[in-house]
Length: 78
Image: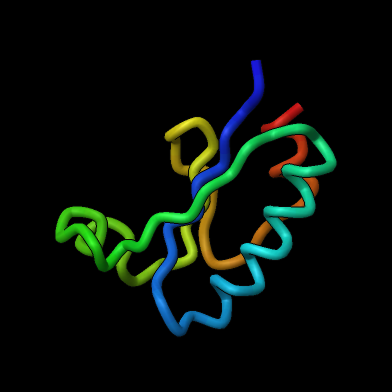
C-alpha cells in the first residue's frame, strides 16, 4: 500500500515552501503520494495547526511539524 503525506500549510509561509520541495522529493523517491491543504481554509484546521505550520500528516496521522525530518519521514513511508 502506498502511503500519503499531507502538508498542512498556509500562504506566504517560507517554511511551508521549503517543506513542499523536500516532501515532493522524498515521496517521489519512495513512491508515496502527497498533497497540500491550506490550514486557513478551515476554522478547525486553523485552531488545531495554526501555530505549527507546516504540519506533516502521514496517512492522516500527525507526524511532525515545522521541519521535515528526512530519515524519520522515510522510515514512516517504508
